[in-house]
Length: 47
Figure 1 (cartoon, rainbow, N blue to C red):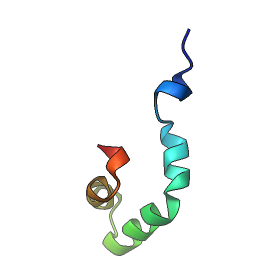
Figure 2: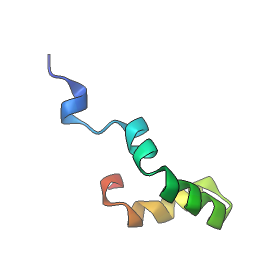
Figure 3: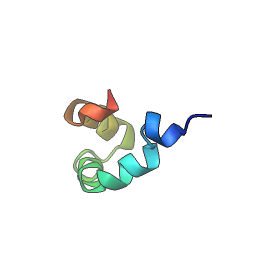
Figure 4: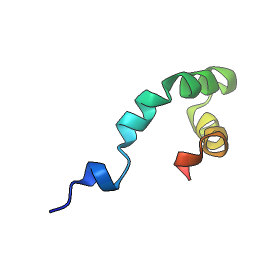
């Protein structure tokens, strides 16, 4: 069996690594869904 962590990004680890950017967008936009949409353009790993 293949190790999923080597073949696929761990979403939790991704959020930890980018927490400052994510928190800043949420504060700026006041909405998690809206912030996530904007982040998808700024962070290429989300695509």
